[in-house]
Image (cartoon, rainbow, N blue to C red; front, side, top):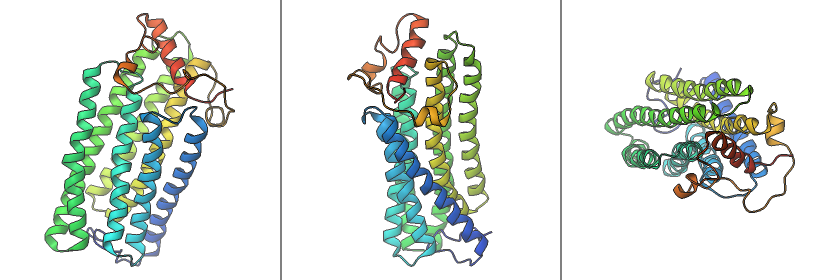
Length: 311
């Protein structure tokens, strides 16, 4: 493996062919997933609007893609440090906070406690200031100045920010799982228990991927961790479709496959058939959260289903 500080400033010093091939493979996976994600998002959503749609799309296009390109240029070319750091930093901001906004926007579908939703949003904004900003400063310093002090500072903040953003995503995911399970219990379909296990399994898979990144970071495998991160975030964005697809299965009461959820033809609908708004007033609307528990689960899931293209 590479030296602990190898790759933090400038290109990789190691000439180990296996390591370079591994990093390029991770980057290729990230790009493939982004391209597929864009196609799926644009062909699946009936209306191109709303926080869920834009956070999902932009976290891939403006997040994972430039983040991966930035490190490709940094590790394998002689591109000036200012250019590579700018590209990868823009991508990192959009990728990491974009993923949290995706989780936050889908939480709107199942959670009607406005105070708790506002606290989650404040947590995301606070971490932008507490984690994004100092990491960005130290990233530029470590790559442009390349002094031991800047490199040590960056190495420390990199571990802190990765831990902080992981905790943030875990908190949002646990809230989503808790509220989703409560709503699914209101439905009578026998398939629900299986869907609950699948929802939990998908979110656990996301958590495991985050823990792998943390392990690599604390083991000081910087180049491997940073290259794998782009692939991991692209996979997590695609798993968002799996989560939503399993919920739609409750409405349709049928097995859901990738083909069923993502590749079926469009459905004609009126302006009401758009993705549920992320406006706080909209999330408490009777059409999504009626007073009756049985009507609540049915209307809530129908609102999700109407946002997607089905036969």
